[in-house]
Structures are given as structure tokens and as C-alpha cells.
Length: 297
View 1 (tube, rainbow, N blue to C red):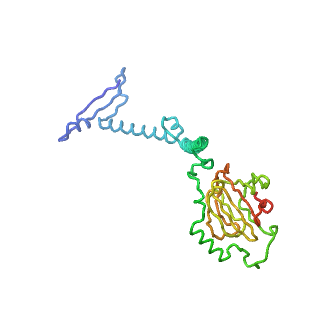
View 2 (cartoon, helix red, strand yellow; view 1 turned 90 degrees about the vertical axis):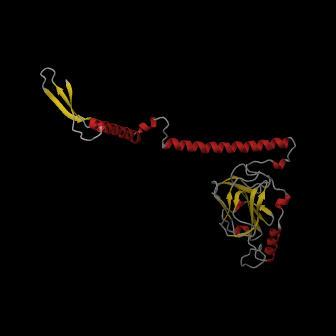
């Protein structure tokens, strides 16, 4: 049997609520048969209140530690761990990519319908989102600055790239050293009968396209079929052509060295099915097979 015995403490001028909190009590456990006192403890309301607050705080800390330091937190509704956040981020990227592909498809289909209805000419169909307009003849015609530059280069004999050799010296292509513009897989080879006067090289995205030899840039522009195109004039009446680039790093009149980056691999132009480089070599106006002089693997 437990008995609680209370005693009043002397409060003096203390407020009544504080005197009640500090009123002392004794909790006594007595044997119900012999009435012998087995256990007793002295306390007051303030002690009980402090013990309750401490127990509640300790319980909250324990629950927090279990949630933070153990895998149980994964079973809490609304909690997202790092793996879930990473999966959500990847899903967002995939959704953006799918949305872009749908936009490209819709744009192509809309232009195709317009061409079939006779509302647009056949060469105005857009195959990618960045291609918003097709340049006409006026866009590709040389401007004033281009004409002045061509005149100055002609006066300086910029295209006679003998580099210290006698003007009449001519080297055979077999004796020339070529630098592979790109390392990758050749997916389409040179075929004069099919009108394919170059080779197609597939490599890593955003790879740098390099000049096969030292020379001068004679064309750096955009065409509807070949996208961003760059042409370099070399010695011995040799011209190298780089098509379907995403970015051109050189301009007309720039001197380039062998192995110097001149463009970035891309997928521009209508006559393309994916990111690659179309490389052509022209010697004295005739196309030659680049694979006969360079190894691209």
C-alpha cells in the first residue's frame, strides 16, 4: 500500500502558485499486512514537473536519433533519400529529352504537311529546332567585308602556300603527311559512282575537328544541306572540306596549323542522320579518298 503525506512549507511572501509547486509530499510504500514502511521518497510538484519535462525531452531525442541514424527513416511517408532524389533528377532529364524529340518530330511533320499541301517549297522543311529559316542566295552571297578580304588575300598570294619552297615546286600527295581530323569509326566510305565524294566519321559528341594540314580557311559558313561547313586551302592545290559541324572555330582568312582545332562535331544540315563529320579532300579539282592517306581509328 502506498500513501502520500503532504506538508506545508513556509512560503513567506511567495506567490500562492509557487508555494503550491514547492509544497512537499512524501510517497510511502507500507506493507498492507504488517504496516511496515518499505519505501519512501520526498518530492514536490516542481520536481515532478521537471522530471516529466526531462523524460519527454529524452524521448524526443531518442526518436530523432533512431530516425536520422537508422534505415527506418525510409519508411516515413514523404521522406526522400539521396537515391530517390537522383532517380527523380534522371527522370527529369529523360522527360526533357523526350519533350525535345517530340518538338522536333512535330516541327518536321508540320513542315512536311505544308510541303505536301503546296504551301511551302520542298527545301524549306526543318529537321531540327535550331533550323528556323533556310538561307537564300542573298544570305550566301559574299558581303563587302568578305570581298575586301578576298582581294587582300589575293594580293598577298595567300593561297600560294609553298611556305618557303620555290613557286614551281609541286609535291605528290603520296609524299604529304596528313593529320587525322577526327578519331572514330568510318560509317560511310568514299564512292565516286554514288556521288559520295568523302567519308563519314562517327566519334564522341562535341569532339574537336582538327585541320589535316596547315593552310588557310577559304570558306566558313552554313548551307541547308551540309549545315556548318569549313573549307581549308592547303599546298599543292589541295582543299579539305569539313561538313555538318555544330560550331565553327575559325573564320575566312584564318591561318591554321596541322592538328589545330577548327570546328566541333555536330549534326547540322538536312543531309545528316546523326552527329558525325563528313570529310572531303579535293586535289586540283578532283575528289580523292581520305582513307588512302589517313587512319581514323
